[in-house]
Length: 321
Image 1 (cartoon, rainbow, N blue to C red):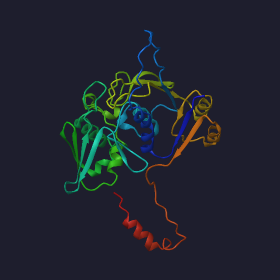
Image 2: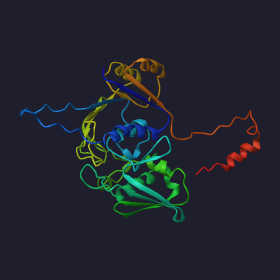
Image 3: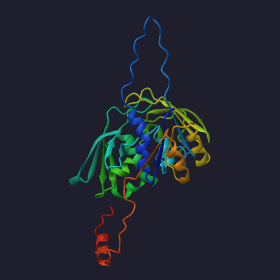
């Protein structure tokens, strides 16, 4: 019986992005080599690998990757679009569209170097102008992703085709994480629209840098994508991805138990059904923490945290930037 995997994600958009990208990162290995035919007989074509996922809703932000602000948004967007880097649970950042970056403390500037291989699905290169446009748009419209950078970024420069410079107003400790939340979109496509907040990015003919291309969509039923044969990071191991849309988590869980889908991500409710899934030997259950601290709480029953002056001192010492 085919092994199926259940992923549960708790409280982290960053984590959703990392896990959503995992099949694509694994997909960058070399393709299998088909041996030459024997006795003039052509072997049958290899079976297609199809990943069957599930969601209980269409993307709340519609079809605009720059407005991604929920787990479902990230799951859909990562099929077509990519960030500069991917934050990890360990606090590291996996280079993606960017190959390297450094902070020039004396100049209060982040310098980002793009991967020369990165291209859009229409064949045009991913450039510094695309990065500049994506972040300036997010800050202009105060989108959830990218918007928080606005008070800390003085300006963004496209130094050359593959180099971007973020001139900062001061130090911003969360810069790398915030930047990792933003999908880069093609400036030569998106800049022709006056109001980006009202833009509904069409699936058919969509231009992205991600590993998949649109094939079919039935609103409220499924999204079907196929691998991009020219994906800039190399051959994609997964041939097709089909995300089924369910009206509730109970129906999604039953589909998982019946083997109708391969993966569930970002479980947000109906936790009582989890023991049933854990009991199935063909289902892998993974529970992971978020990659950052949501709040700091002190045990006031012990010394010295029981002293108000100590708690006030800790509050003053916390760098809220």
